[in-house]
Image (cartoon, rainbow, N blue to C red; front, side):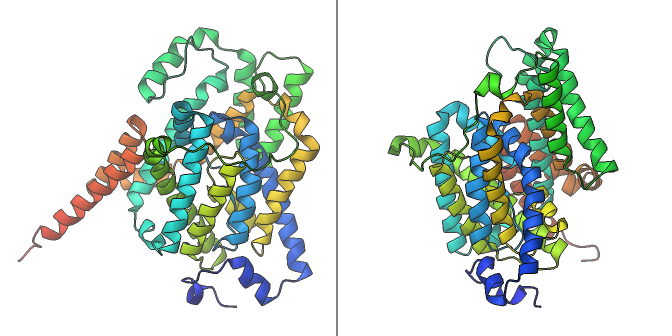
Length: 426
């Protein structure tokens, strides 16, 4: 069977290619099992990412159902799993705080249009040329920023006012709130993270995140612990998808949201193609980058209409999909349907989930997201160290867009300087 290299330039969803090759009952069984495995992983993670992003948990589920289905159905990768991603937490939270839910949905829709246009214009290859040091720098920066945002829920802290956005003021405010620490929340949050790490090393095939969240919920409910839950902050999660509805548009708001939409687009393109590249290396196949961007764009537009947040390819869930034996994009489509089924059957139970347990889940996500070994390796040579530190520092202190732009500029300057310096003996 060809690896897809010869057709990587085509605007044809991989689903069509798979069906044209002949889809068997045996392949369907493998896809169904992989889909169930990924859905069990995605269920708590989708809610955790939504809560950390400043929106209600069901919006993460809407994103996984609508976005996840369309990314697989229309995408250029056989194995890509779409949904909400931890990398977007900072951007979504900042947009939500400044422009509200309607503004966030408009930004998601705008980024979807931009991603679609980038894919149609065959510019997907340009995104892949972003320097590796820049990717490592902003990924580690995002991990640090997300972790700092989870400290409040992880320890059950109560701030006197709104939580500051910038890192240093945030840490100062959290430090002042230490006397309000809730021991029950701390035990549930830290215990959930510890259990996930333990299961990952002891029973790597078990759904550690789901087990930790369910166990924390049972303990909190059985002993009537004081830790805040999804129900106490957000109320009940709906059991069905909402009716699609366009956000309220105005030209002035669109112009104000343009920088945010550009940030969503840039990160979405990088994250989705990076995830597809990881899938290629694991499955020995070749994805269609421009088709993938078109699918990501359409998925974001649809997600906004259903009240969801940003959709992108997710590396951890995509890798889980491959390891679980997926054969085709039908696995990703079925994973979205399984999540919808979980919503219909078990949505009332979600109100008992402690927010500190979801913070513990994201602590694990941050640890896995930060490429610690690669970051240390890049620091050993001053050119790559300059790029990675510029990206990391500005991502943490300012924001993601500044970090990526600064890192690319430093990399470009160093590349030009290297070419203009005469070699020895000249």
